[in-house]
Length: 320
Ligand code: AVJ
Image (cartoon, rainbow, N blue to C red; front, side, top):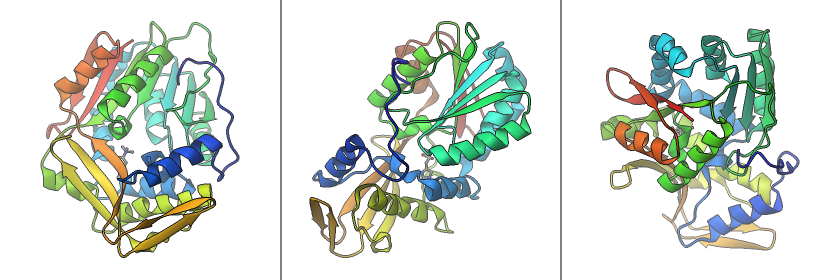
């Protein structure tokens, strides 16, 4: 997204670039081992995430969809005549289909780190909306994306639904929102969905479902890392942990070693004691006024918000 400069070269699928490899190994070697949540999303991880969005416990996706439908008219009015919709982290493009129809977009650009998964989704989107010019850009949105204008002079809407912004800590979120404002150009806007704080039991169930899909999604990151850097993690030896951290207002996900583990990769490795954890995800929950303040700090001007009756999820339109 950044600078709209040159596209970073894309490594072949399934092999880490030198930067990625360095980032992954540095995280694993920290005293508190950590792995970026972007490594959840290989093909299988994207499929598991899609399964999560259909779980009874996982309220964000269906709450957001209901918000878009219920307030569609007002949202379309706030957005105005945007013709180019850009969605960072587009995934299966399900929401893009509804949004593009709602704002009568002529062009759609989906950006996602899971490039093959995105290409299939874009192909389905073209069938569903034959009048829409839709294209896929396989890229890591946190590293910068090259987006030449599809339609010179057309107003842009950056669409960032699903509380994806929750994966970033507040300073990173601020920077990313700033990039999105640049991407929207001077007369464009941002339509963003994010998760609100709520009852801890509701939050924790959403990230530790009874069917174990979120546990499989969490463990799958290790299989993905094995392919990316040649490590020998045994995913079944790691337990899924998910809990709300009230001080930071975030869900944390970790993988906890079920017993002592020796993990090796070309050129190194690490021993983990039983119970030691790898921190795999944060999912921040912002009170509406805090998030609106963040948008203004990122340079957006007018904002307009919609929430559901339970106050569980919010959608905000912000003018660039
Ligand atoms: C895709 C980041 C919005 O934080 O709710 C779902 C990812 N992790 N279950 C979220 C996720 C575990 C999801 N986001």
